[in-house]
Image (cartoon, rainbow, N blue to C red):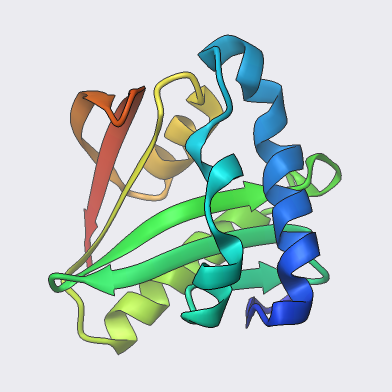
Length: 144
């Protein structure tokens, strides 16, 4: 499968994917994870959201200050374990390289150990850990 830029018609599928992927973490975090409340309509309109298939997996990223920021990575529970997250992260890195950007940066919630293992396995280095916007987060960076 190849990631494609999301279109307005994908909005419902994008939101459903994100909610399904992050809903299991609500109880452990004590509130909705931030990606569940992002404005995907605006992000899609700005060309920042990529999907695999009909929304089985979703990624949002944007460039700023010479760096690609990976903002959201989600997969439907039924699609997890199929390598779609790795595919989307690789696509984000390719977008960064094509744009001449030096690195990809991201953060994940400290309660999301699976995401932490994924990013470490993909060569991302933990650069910080702590409270940010009301959440305990782990920050990562990968120099390209």
